[in-house]
Length: 222
Image (cartoon, rainbow, N blue to C red):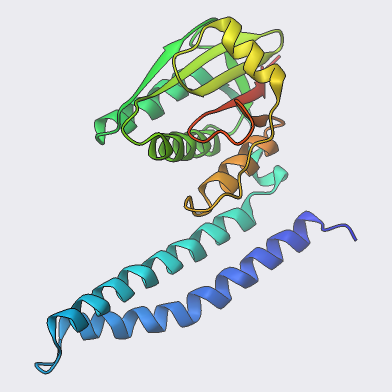
């Protein structure tokens, strides 16, 4: 059985709705309890209410991510497609992450910062930002370097250690499977993967089972 984009969109929207409706009710009651805590509650009980409130907020965030995922069909992602200077966009995303306290930097191994890919700047910015966030979080105290470069008709972006043009090409050619369904990252990786895929690109791991590193390949605009 083949699942169409329309089936996928409806399924994700339905799941998001079924999560959001009861989640919003529970979140409302928890906020009420946290704001007007009864005198008889102990400190551990208050902490449990706070933790339940945080977890409920996380569930509502997942519902929102599901809604975003539902809207990410290829046609939507490429709507209003235009040349996007991918490496300038990478630098912009990395700068924003660094300004927020992240240990992340950008380097250009090969090519021009204005090297264009065809697509939607806002969607690509979202995908790159999600990858920077997840890869940086998975690396822990180790700094994250985002490296850009070109190879034939492709633009390559590596997330991980500092890399040369040779490293970029080798990583893209290795095409190790990228586990976008791993736990602990919410729906950030599936959303980023779907955006890149809608732009006729790919995400690959740098090695089997590797976390905190990947390489994105996008076709350059003609």
